[in-house]
Length: 343
Length: 295
Image: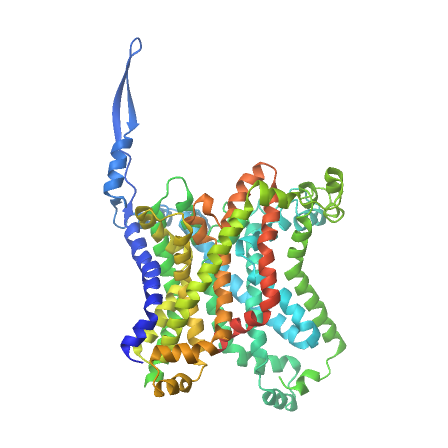
């Protein structure tokens, strides 16, 4: 295809992506290097007829407005925002490392820094939910593959629901069931005979319920992909494995799983990408006291009364760096494959 | 798998295990929805019962408060009192526009990517993959300040364009692999017959591309419909779509003791998705697997 035709076809799409994905990334980087203007203070002398004069410090709103008009980004701050307590917290980490009471103390004090708290939940969510959801999806695929055809349709229908549902709505639905006056929460209280048992109160239980939500909503995707993969397992290979005396389990282990491996890489990649942006369940479960994620931190900075663009920008840049690190192996592999094809 | 392995006899315990597991999974997947739909027709002390969840099933308090075991009060409160219908209208506008625009841009772009063997086509695809992985909220923090400056924050068209752009990487990948599966000879022979590239696309490719476009369209629709991060930050309170509306419901409604409004709104937002899966199950499944098998 000639270059000109190619670009004529792809231009609208390219413009949209450059304007609303590439440029915002640049804008985020620029923002992260700036910080809000400090408040302009003026000293006002307040004299009353009988009370004498008192001096009062006030925020000069007119001057503030003018400053904001002139420099809407705020003032240049360099890497200051990245290194402050809300983000990488370099000084605090240094202090913790230089004086601490053992390894446990270091971990718990670093965990109390907001950025590391969010990062640890995000990573745990990514790397716990993804494998568990894939395993569950694989087992469901094997089971559905074994049931009569008439049942398959409805089972697939119901299986799709947790995945297709709006994440915020799905997490609300689960949250209403597990909170202490919902059906599951109340039943658990009865079961353990502990009326104070509440999934919200303890960090461990909050994490567990968020991870449960993650597996619940991620498993259907693996299931559908693996189920489609199962339809393409070569029958001849299976039969020869049977003739060689392979048991059911051995057939799964040595024929089916290797056959599904390429699919599994794909599923893992997509789910890692999606789980890295975990955000809605935290809002739905109102779990921010015990679990925050990187995306939630950005949302929180932006949705307050004073929108902290600098802070949100810095977290965003750090998140983007995280995404790129996560994607590097895939990018390298695709690059090699492409070169292979061309040569 | 061949018939021989399918029909091969399984031992009874294994069959039993499979059945139990399937039932367990279907209950796990479907019960939360069934329960919430059922509960949305009750009053709050029943659905969020401190005494016993049998109340939610029999509607003890619903009976006492309204005189019948089911009530539509939650729905009335959400749709009429709190004007949820506005949000529904906005969602309809946003999702339909996003789907139509992103499919139009995506088919053109995806077709070009599939037919060009150039190196830059590969780079565009890789860039799209990286863009696909960006958490949407990171982009939102880049939009806000420029949008405030340009004074285009808060209105539907802005969100529509942003969602189209966020959607493009996925749409391009999906349609790119779909167009790869349409034989090159088809449009090339049309061009030998004297069509220009665009005429070939219009007369030969457009008539055969609908299955792929419908599947991709479903996913564009879902992205726009399910989005929370972008719409909640980019729309003003009057223009909110369903999902941010539900989230802003939560705070105010809980204080006023009207949680059932939120429950009713949540159920209302689920219904279109149910219908979608009911009618397009096959396309959704094929769309999910197409990406995997080809990508």
